[in-house]
Image (cartoon, rainbow, N blue to C red):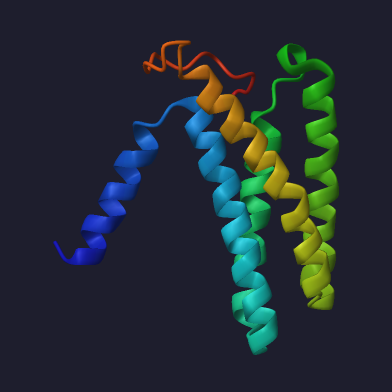
Length: 142
C-alpha cells in the first residue's frame, strides 16, 4: 500500500467511526474546501476544475439537505432547508457564469453554519467538569 492509499484508508476509517455531529461538521468543511478550490480554478481559468469542485460542493449540500429531519428539527430544519436550496441554485449560477463572487457568498453562508455546528457539537460532548462524554443526538438523519 502506497502513502496515498494509507491516507485514503485513514479518511474512510475516520468517517466510518465519526459521530453524527462530527460528520455534519466534516461535510461543511468539505463544502467550504471545495467551493474555495472552485474559486481557485476560476482564477486559473481551469473550467474542468471549476466544474469538478462546484459539483463536489453541490453533492455535499444535497446530502446535508437530504439528512434534515423536518419533523424533529422543526423551524430550524425548515430554515436550513431553505438555505441549502438557495445555495444549490447559487452553485448552478456560479458554474454557468464562472462567478467567483457567488462562490464567495456561498462560503459566507456555510462558514457560520459550520461554526454553529462545531459549537453545538463541542457543547454536547463536554460535561460541566470538562470531561468528555458521549455526544448527544443532534437533529439530523445523518
